[in-house]
Length: 134
Image 1 (cartoon, rainbow, N blue to C red):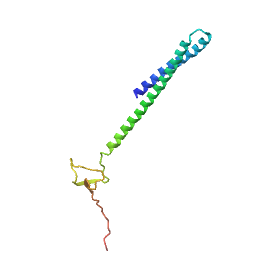
Image 2: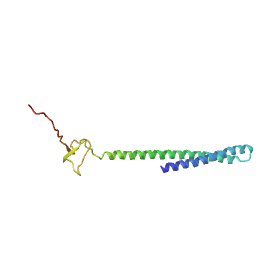
Image 3: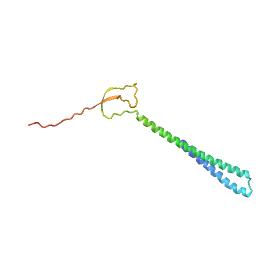
């Protein structure tokens, strides 16, 4: 995030430099018509403007790359959260467990048919009220 802000600041600085070079080139265009400056000075100003504009384009590309890298890092964090959620085993029923079929150190594979634990659901106790027979 800080790198993106720094990149945007560099783009603004280089954009200001390019705007200054454009102003100088426009002024030199009028001066060369009046014969006050040499053609070489005008060509140098033109080359500087083109170089400054190329720098601005490169800076903007760098900022775009930083933004893409930031989004990739956010996606990696989200992926890590999803992967971490796979490490929790939630039982679909509440109750007590029986004997464990898998203990620490055993190999567990995806789609394995052997249950890791058997759940013994809580027994339901029901009371029925029945009238006496007469």
